[in-house]
Length: 87
Image (cartoon, rainbow, N blue to C red; front, side, top):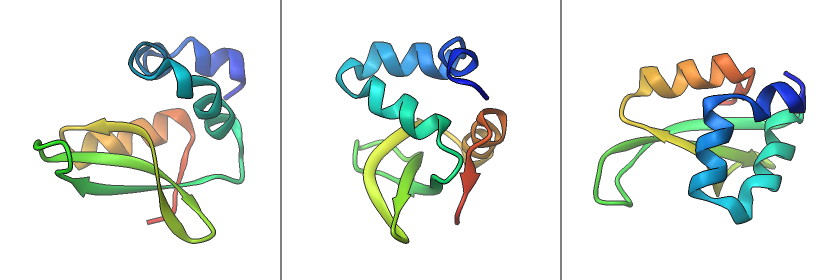
């Protein structure tokens, strides 16, 4: 997807609203073909969520692109956005 296409998605609209200071970084990551993502279960927030996090040098980072209630939803979002899931 191009940057313009990504910016028009519900994901981008939500990210911009929820984390405006990280929006530009998220767009750069979302449009980079070399970036990999990890989908994993997380309960850091007190709720069990499936986080989509950036992978850097083989390690999961603290930068969340999104969090969903189910793994299926997380994987569908990755597929829709064209994000490569590393693990």
